[in-house]
Image (cartoon, rainbow, N blue to C red):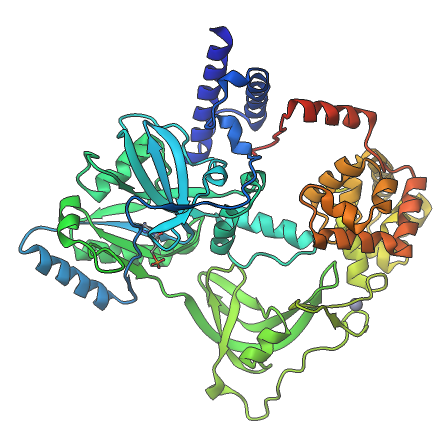
Amino acid sequence: MKVKEQIETLREELRKHNYNYYVLDAPVISDFDFDMKLKELQALEEKYPEYADPNSPTVRVGGTVTKNFETVKHEQRMYSLDNSYSKEELLEWEKRVHKNLGNTDVTFTCELKYDGASISLSYENGVFLKAVTRGDGFQGDDVTANVRTIKSVPLYLKDDYPSKFDIRGEIVLPFDGFNKMNEERIKQGEDPYMNPRNTAAGSLKLQDSALVAERPLECLLYTIVGSDLGISSQWEMLNKARKWGFKVPEIAEECKNTEEVLAFIEHWDRERHKLPYETDGVVVKVNSLQQQEELGYTAKSPRWALAYKFKAEQVETILEKITYQVGRTGAITPVANLKPVLLAGTLVKRASLHNADQISKLDIREGDTVFVEKGGEIIPKIVGVDFSKRPTNSVPTHYIEECPECHTVLRRKEGEAQHFCPNDSGCPPQITGRIQHFISRKAMDIEGLGSETVELLFKEGLIENYADLYVLTKEQLIPLERMADKSAENLIAGVKKSCDIPFERVLFGLGIRYVGETVAKKLAKAYKNIDALMAASMDELIKVDEIGERIAESVVDFFENEINIDLVNRLKEYGLQFSLTEEQLEGQTEKLKDKIFVVSGVF
Ligand code: AMP
Ligand code: ZN
């Protein structure tokens, strides 16, 4: 059968490319070629639903909605690990192991302790069946649809896998991807996520698997459970799992004795900051599975394994001054300016103080000697004050009441931790921030205009909002510092060219709070033009897929504001796109009909 073969071949090919890219980190084709093949497969699967496969590479883009995650019992319990915080504790554990096993040789496997969300994956006959969170160890939540979208989880296995087994590991969010997600959030005026672990765990419980698919999650595996596996050691287990197609980190070591274990720990305690994902220690395991069985379990954890926890690196330094930053949305962030200090390999000069509550809870004051830590969070944080070193003339911190930039009295919404400056139309960093957002790559992508130029134009009184960009003249620009003839022309040409930018990106560019790229697309699709959107009520907006109350309220607020209405009207006049094009409208009905999901880039 020809079509069936064609589908099979495409799936096989895509599976390989996925594996190369996400497990081996070594892609062999371009993202574009990959997308083309994926689209081809999607089209075929749509046309021939009789060849559907829940584990086809096309499911990686998600699209399943889970309202309630079903509770599933683990066939074998998922245990915790005993922790140790010192070498002495580790040596004592090793002694106990030797004592319990009698006088035999014991070797160990050392692995990193990945800090993410524990997961158990089930496979039967080489096919991915389900994924369950750890839960209480006895039973967890079925998050299969979401885990299917994680590209390093193999949906089909290779080589000599056993017919039935579970494999356990950790779902993590590498720093790189985490930071990118946060940059996006900050741009959209949302609070950044606190740390990769919580975000990874939260991702597994999202209802829409398409949203999970967009997150750069990875699944690192370390334990296989089942019967008749034909495996005799932990070390062999890692190697087998790797061979079957799982992502098993190369950083692991078979150690003959405690000296080697300690060397591994010391090495990675020093080097862990260079790892792409969070780790909070080393897991030492008795290598032989038979010895593991002999040692058995306590009520909570295996006797054959121990987690050696790294200490969060902490240093003491002086908090010289507390300053306050005003973001694009007016949110105020207090910042601790520190006497520079070396921490986890980087020179730290500033730390986040989060908000007023945090400052008063820890009673942090200027002049204090504070403890700075680099834990799971990317930005160092202050975890406490060394009160014994507090100067005698110290005074409690009085949180600012006025905006440091425009002196408007700050406000704080009920239930929100952050203060904000309500003067959104007159507060300089808010004004320039909005314009900078408007011209940014994912919005209007204006060539020849950068953030610094925006600040300069504002300072010179040439622009007060993004609509003003469209009436700039060359004569106005030439006298500016560092503005040559050519750059003035480029700027004006770039602005003009942005009139072709599609509606959804214009909508994103407007800077409505909580309306990020994805939401803007959804709204553009649902309303098709700005007039319809401006006329929409809260109730109508909420009916749109994935638009919640918070977003709906923000949209309504935005378009109730005279200033914003005026801006939109001006932009319309200048020729910006405020409705979907014929082409987009056509594509939309077609897309709905075929239900094809377009994936771009390294999705
Ligand atoms: P804890 O949550 O502190 O009790 O630590 C136990 C958890 O560490 C286990 O449930 C695993 O999810 C996780 N873990 C991370 N890396 C490893 C690893 N290499 N081997 C075993 N468990 C690990
Ligand atoms: Zn202000």
